[in-house]
Length: 285
Image (cartoon, rainbow, N blue to C red):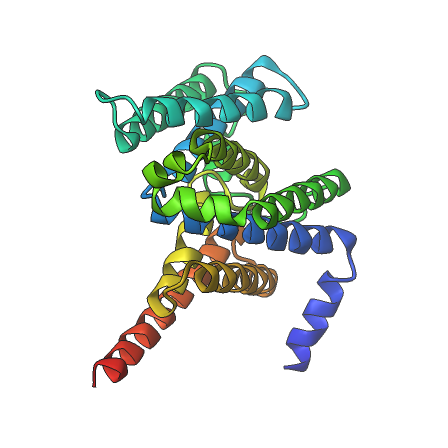
């Protein structure tokens, strides 16, 4: 136990480790808040699709030699979020089909570009790091922390101020339109914020694991709680706890941050599933 505390004390004496912890917790919080609405609207895999788009955009930025990759990655990912939302309403291309189409296309183009125009001698390591996150947490900068702080503040303000509208759009979009709510606008804002979160989270968990931060906490909370408010609160708390545990374990065990966080989320889901099954049996009796 003393050895573990000594190791943690050593690592957390460095500001870069604190950067990773703060960014991880903020990303987990934002992802969980949006995740409840996305899961209930059966649009869970928008995170997966947009993360692949972000990977493709990152490959374009790397090939063209642009140092500030956010200039390309962020606009393209946000644009894809809008396209997914629009094409998802097309009678010929439903939501899940549009996500799969854009996701697979962006991933294929990104990987092809990295092979045709390699930016380093180890392409496999570059692709693996982008898809599954960096094996080291010491890659974040102070700018990333401030960006996440600003984003988290925007997401929290948006969620608190428009909670009733989000609730209405999530459960009955047709009824919300009939009552005068501009559901298209709120859906668009949710999609754009999701895209921004995904771009920021790429450095931490990688493009293939981002959707897990959106899906697992919401699904775990739904196993035990039934109301929208309780599910949202539980999802946020659980997501932050799992992110913190994952980051600490990755420091102690030298495991990839993204995979460790997602594993913690998976364990929480299994625990909540058992608790939900037990409580439902008691209620029936």
